[in-house]
Image 1 (tube, rainbow, N blue to C red):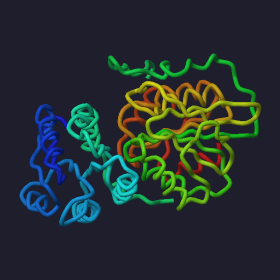
Image 2: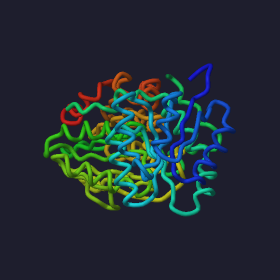
Image 3: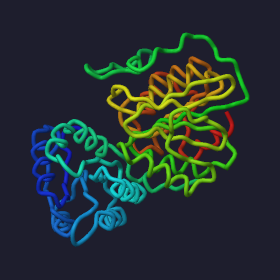
Image 4: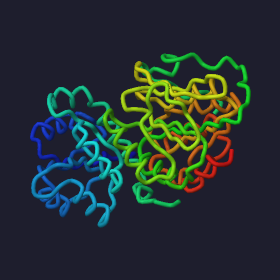
Amino acid sequence: MPNRKISVLLVDDSAVVRQVMLAILNDTPDIHVMGAASDPIFAMDKLAREWPDVIVLDVEMPRMDGITFLKKIMSERPTPVLICSSLTQKGAETSLQALAAGAVEVIAKPETGLKHFLLESASELVAAIRAAALSNVRNLGRRSVRAASPVVPAGKLTADAILPAANGQAMAQTTERLVAIGTSTGGTQALEAVLTALPRVCPGIVIVQHMPEKFTASFADRLNSICQLEVREARNNDRIHPGLALIAPGGKHLMVTRSGAFYHAQVIDGPLVNRHRPSVDVLFRSVAKSAGKNATGIIMTGMGDDGARGLKEMLDAGASTVAQDEASCVVFGMPKEAIKLNAAQRILPLDAIHQAILHK
């Protein structure tokens, strides 16, 4: 948002959370905190006088819960909302309801050690607010079925930290196709739109969705309940087969290995890559090495450039590649960077991506 600060409203019943977030954001030159409220009722009083660019919202609060408040906001005046939720199973399930209702992203917080955690995660909080301010919230309600690499900022690791690049040898082609998908901000809704449009019989799919630890299992369970194909969180050594979609666990990298004609999931620890774990670049590089021309790579809505270089590596290895178009993205960052690298053979709207999965 050039020429003016991003206006933020904080809504959280924890005085500690409000105090620490205020301190962090007040020290950020391009962000202005227009107010803080302990519950949605107080928040509505502030909204009657001024409307923010971004709302940071807790889910469990007195007088009115965050989900009810979120639905009210999205029905009356759609606004980018970040959910601030506990790192618990209950918190994960509630946050997924919020994402389904139109929230842009989840900021995870522990039940104890809140002040230390928030201070340590200050950069992630600021980045999430900036991404939310750039998001196209109108796309959150959809339910339809360069020559040089980008500069890597200091301290930001690439996929080289996990595995070397492909050596250029083409993989022998098999009948076993593989689809790799990478996404971030807005991706939970986009993945739902794509996966629910697929039939039970479709190529095996591996997915990196930037999401906090403990949230991915609940997300996979929710998708599994509404999709024809099987969807679950990836486990180490899972065989990737037709009719199955595996989602990288939060806090772990997901890679693909090949044994004979079959592909398997490898779930590993490791440093953050592009400041993410799981990283789309790590997944895409492993698919380039293990599947090559047998694969399709798809990069969808999200902030930043994670996945852009990996998609180019997949293309160079013979894979077919797709980027989601700007009009249907919540945030066009990741697809835009891939397109700049000429990594995407096709640029498709969200409602056409399932066809790219079914027909290479």
